[in-house]
Length: 121
Length: 197
Image 1 (cartoon, each protein chain N blue to C red):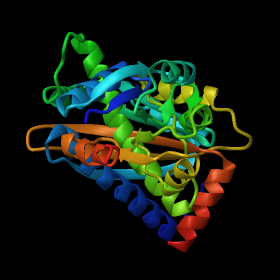
Image 2: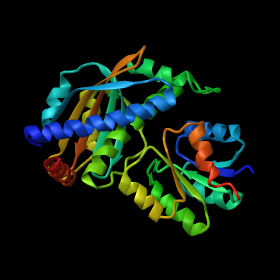
Image 3: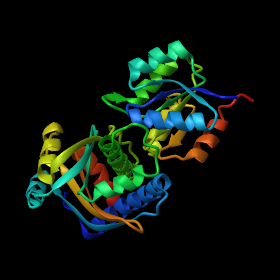
Image 4: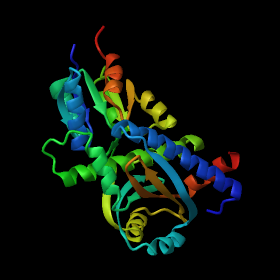
């Protein structure tokens, strides 16, 4: 069953590439956002099955965006997509309510494997 | 930062370990095997580096990464454009202008390199380093460094580490300089870690 995904990343090309990859494997990018305000607004409008969130946003801390999304919806499924593979950040992000981690760069196979965990059983 | 010989070796090993990780990640998106060779690694304070960097009069593509404890700058010379083109050729362009694609590709390559090295140092020190998204600029090494120092105001003298790296694939080669500037606290965390290694 296709997932409806909100992509949060401050890089327009990164959002477009991820959107294209999602479409290619049978999912849909229903909305995109480049900062916290847009992420919260589009989340409320579209109620996506999944949010992909880059930790390094311009002038914003991705972990704060994560916390704000979780506060908005405690059941939100939020996949962190980041080049930051530090152990302490990983632990902090999971403690803040992320439901998964996808390290950049990733390929089609990585994305399929990671998103399989979000498919309804 | 004054390092013993043993500290210098340990620091070089950590940086090279980070660079090795970055090569694996670059191979994933470019479908090309890359090798990196650390040609040199120098440490000192910001004043000494201003003089060192002033000797190089070429223009570079610089990518800044900010963090509360300091900054990273990854610098590519003109040959870096060919590497960026190699990355772009494997990705669909759509209607995006080539100069924007190249800029994004160089920022992404720098992002992978900087995060891999920062991650290795952070894990070794058992701390977290939250890096900003990449910000690009173009200029002489000394100008780019001075701009970063002006923006990063910390108490006391910064520790600066400069790593000069040669990147090669089967058909391309480029040189990359990585400048890392750390505040006193991060410098002490790093020194303690190097003493243990």
